[in-house]
Image (cartoon, rainbow, N blue to C red; front, side, top):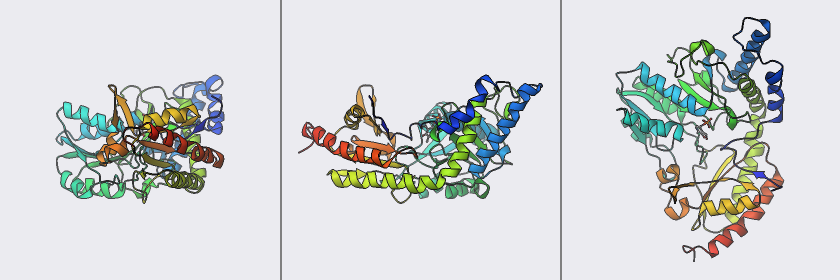
Amino acid sequence: MSKIVYADNNATTQTDPEVLEAMEPFFCELYGNPSSIHTFGGQVAGHIRKARESLASLLGCEPTEIIFTSCGTESDNSGIMSALYLNPERRKIVISKVEHPAVKNLGSELVRRGYKVEEIPVDGKGRLDMDKLKQEVNAETAVVSVMWANNETGNIYPVREVAQIAHQHGALFHTDAVQAVGKIPMNLAKESIDMLSLSGHKLHAPKGIGALYVKRGVRFRPYIIGGHQERSRRGGTENVTGIVALGKAAELAEKNMKLENTKVKALRDRLEKELVSAVPKTRVNGDTESRLPNTSNISFEFIEGEAILLLMNQLGICASSGSACTTGSLEPSHVLRAMGVPYTAAHGSIRFSLSRFNTEDEIDYIIKSLPPIIERLRQISPYWK
Ligand code: PLP
């Protein structure tokens, strides 16, 4: 396959060439252990410090509030488990119905371990039921975890208000900001978010590096117990190349934040508008009033998303569908089901997620290629006509 049009950036992103360049010396030249006493190893610690400062600058927090981890999933698990460990008398957690499996499946596991886990519903646009949230958060609740932005629809959630509700009842507030960091500005010093998770590979750093923000003054219990790394909050020799990469990616994200919200947003808006006007029986899933600038989730009714993906794939277009093949049958995603998207639409949903590396030409290519694919599939669909 020659031409690749990558519109699946919520799954993972291209490592920025500048990030790769920043990492390179740490493989064969500066490969020392940052904990070593000798200068050769010790000098690496300075580069970790710089990366931590760059990430703190992107988040608007103190460098000491950042713990480097291996990924978003580890950050989510560490934050939530710490809150439960430190508040053993509180046996309840409150999450939303549209969390990523990193939080949702941890919730299911916690139910098996005897905790009460309440999933707050969303409406047809994926907006959180705030009244239900207020009813469910109480003196039993150790932690409330609601994502900052949804990976499938791009919906942005009112984390400030949710944090307030958690605090009114003495619960901690954690947010999975894996999709939000680098795409929308944030200033954590001004928020009352206790813990926040992020992942490098969603913002043009490589896979295998993440971070957990823990607000100063919030107690934290390590999830990975070992050496004194990360001020004894996460054991294990540091992933130096990953940390340096995340620092550089954060620096570039801060520099390009305006671009995300102008160029990338304009590309997304044009793609969405033209596809919806070119193809009959489509619907945009999510809250178009409060959404990430790069994400568009469109349902092409009466056909299967997976079939659309396969035909797009033949043309080199990469995107995701809102249904997943589990045990041989196509199941719409839990996010679209929670939103009550009708069966015929949920099955034909496609998520396009762009980045600053996408071009106008690529958007033209998708706009030109997709309508004939939809037409072809509808002609053979038993549900169409
Ligand atoms: N949370 C959200 C919202 C995500 O989109 C993802 C990845 O898709 C994760 C958590 C997990 O991140 P990681 O792949 O770094 O474990």
